[in-house]
Length: 273
Image: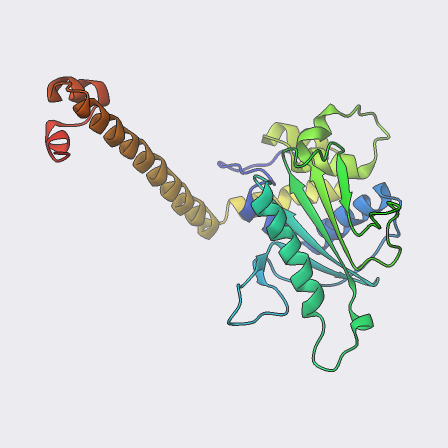
C-alpha cells in the first residue's frame, strides 16, 4: 500500500504520532510487540486517554503535565508513550516527572498505596543518553549494594533508540517489535510502504495517516507550525546579522562594506548607532 497524500510527516512527528497511536488497533499491536520482545506478558487495552491529555493527579498550583499517549490495560500496569525529538537531562527529568505524577495521581483520598498500579514509561529517542547503548534500555529500581532489581518496583522507564534499529540485521522472520521500530522511524512514504506491504495492521496505519494528513484542518495546523518555524529561523538569521554588523562597526569597517557583507540595508545599519 502506498500513502497517497501531497504532504508527508513521519510517525516521529509529534502530531502524527499522537493521532496514529491513539488508534486502538495500532496501539495494542505495537504495545504487545514490545512486551513480546521483552519476554513479558501480553495485554489487552481497557481505556486509553486522548492525545495531549492532562495527567491524572493534576493540581492547579503545580506544573501541569501534558503527555502523548496514556494506556490503561487489563494488567496491573499503566503505560505512558512519549516521542522525543531530542533527549538530554531536561527530557530525562520530564519523563521521570511524568511517570511519578501518573503513579501518585492514581491515589484518591482514602485509597491504600498498594492500590496504585505500576507505571511504565516508553520513550522513543534518537540519540545516546548516559551510555544507553542498547536498542531498548531499561531503567528501574535496583539495590545499589548488590545490583539486584526490585521485584515489586512500581516505576519503570524504557528508552527506545530509534537511531539504532537500522543497524540490526533483518530477515523474513524478524521480530514484530523491530518491524514496528523500522516503520516508526521510516523517513519517507516509499520506506513506510515497503515495510507495511502485506501487513494488515501497518497498511491500516498508513490509511489512518493518509486520512489524517489529507484533513484540511490538520493541513492548516501544519501550515501554521511551518510559518512559526520559518519566522523563528528568519528572526534568528536576522539577529545574527545584527550581531555581526555591530561587531564590524566596532572594528571600524565602513557602513557601506558592512551592508555588502551582511545584506542589511543602510537604514538598518544606521539604526544600530
